[in-house]
Image 1 (cartoon, each protein chain N blue to C red):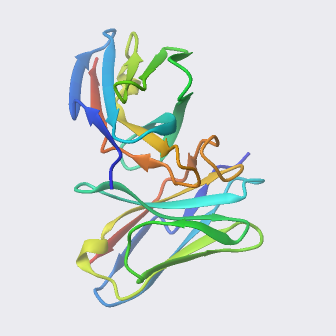
Image 2 (tube, chains in turn cyan, purple):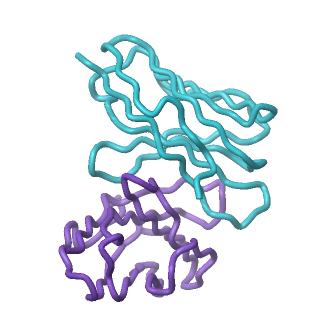
Image 3 (cartoon, one colour):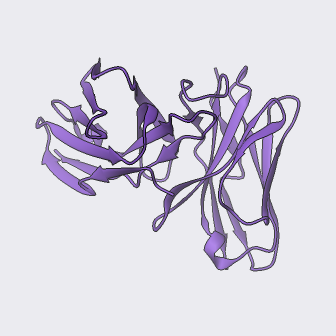
Length: 112
Length: 114
């Protein structure tokens, strides 16, 4: 069953604009991870943020985590056509020895 | 370093048949997880193996089984295939088991059941 839910389901922006995707989850977590998937291929790990962290950066990516609201956001700045992909958040429950559970993803289209 | 390799890339089977999918993890990775991806259900967890032992199992019927070998390579088997088993099956490896280790995915096996 899905733990995280991404919002919006689909997003279309112009090249150079910023893209923000949100993820909400239900139970207490150990960490939250974001992945990217290009059409028909495997997922690529982008960033991991732990429950005691509030913000992390990696290149043009910025991830925030608000455990009180059980939500996270992924910001991609100065988007490029190559950023076109589906983006998934994935969570690990705090209870331990549990697998990574993925949301259904946000489909991002960056128009050149 | 070679990535996660899944074979075959595409597979077409008939209802009632069985299928075996193979996954070779990144060298040195001892944990392998399997996921099923469909448009309707998204990514659903199937199994997780570490050092030949199943650590976790998702909510799938007993027709779905897996194993891991001593070289960390993994296989999953689906018996008595149903139309609803059509999906992209993704394998992922990580250095160790546990939540702090990011998953490295293969490009999947696209299974079509007719």
